[in-house]
Length: 247
Length: 247
DNA sequence: CGAGACTTTGACCGTAGTCAATTTATGTGG
DNA sequence: CCACATAAATTGACTACGGTCAAAGTCTCG
Image (cartoon, rainbow over all chains, first blue to last red; front, side, top):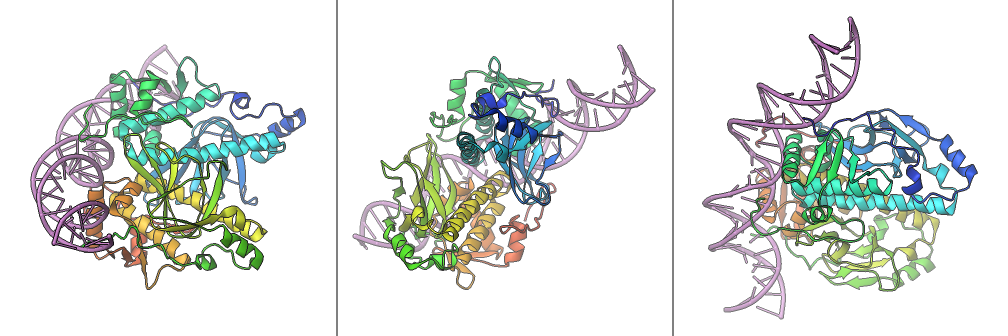
């Protein structure tokens, strides 16, 4: 039985992402309409690059999942982060080997961040989204630099859970992740096989339920401790750290 | 015979860091004087935190090395980046477990970035320094996420070499690194023992010379390929990627 | 010269990777 | 609605890169 999949069927997350995602409410109607005019659709698997003329540009994810990646000349791939509805990212021109690139993991809708940044409240929330994105890079570094495979998987799932919850994409503790185990592996610096085995172990331990693109985390609090997970500001405890660890 | 050490004797890098480091020349005298007035000394080992009142602040490294780190509740440590003369970083209040903190790896001199950001040229170069710092975070993620121990060490050394060269701290291909093998390990997500063995291997292969806080990289071009190193914009080739690799 | 901080080494272990084959979706055309 | 092709998830066997422990060996410096 498959665990995750659905790399393309989850794109209709919903338009209302911004109602809860970034704090963009209370913007006057004119600007909102102008904003929606810039929305653009990107199909699964497509890479998002800036128009040839316009050097750089910042986009806001309206719906769908995007992966920020880099491909090494020998084929190895590293995914830096996942962009969810409400997230902001800057797009560079080239998406070739060696540089950073954005790839749509599902059908995606993106819009121009500039079109939103008209009011001070909106531009402030955009700046905030960017800051959070940077903050997550540090978590990512800790994850692949100092956590074990099990901790990495849990930690990432916890982060995704919390981020999705904020934008209302978690129902009854469960949420969709349109991620292939391979994508997971490339994000966490592990091999697909090992990701697979780690997930199974976590399932056997009853820590989570995963399959068909859906994930449910059980015992959130305990998981946070197990994965050295720190939700945004508060930091949680973390087990082990003495000699060999089995478990 | 020791390889690296000198965790504290290398702080007098030189005042002229900015002459070549960031593009801050041609600023009027008044501002420069005002800037130097904000310079502050930090002793080796001390952690740099923002004053209790002033929430956040940005600093510019004038001389010495700083490590941007995070300590996990169980003691594991991850170093995100090394800050060299000319680099800019934002300091948060707390430097406790779980959050990001700056630690002086040598005696350090730092100044207020704000004091520099008066002219448009200066503030532009500061923004540039920040952007480069962010860019390096991605390299760091690739390093610990997808490179082997040997590649990580070489890659980091190459980066440090290039950064130090720009600010004139490389003489005859050699440069000082006031880094303990332990610091190296915590940055690259490896154990001290393995860092030690990797360095020895690299030495035996004649790829580099290291000891007494000095490092010299031999065959730069070949190293870049071996370590998947991409100097700033251009990307270099990368070997291996098929089955077991000995070497 | 002794204490403490670093670097080295050796022995041994285990987490995670590689290969390759199998099973299970998912999707498409008839 | 079924056969087949393809993508994704699993498994088993075996390997190796990197970690842990612990005991030297070196430096540095007061």
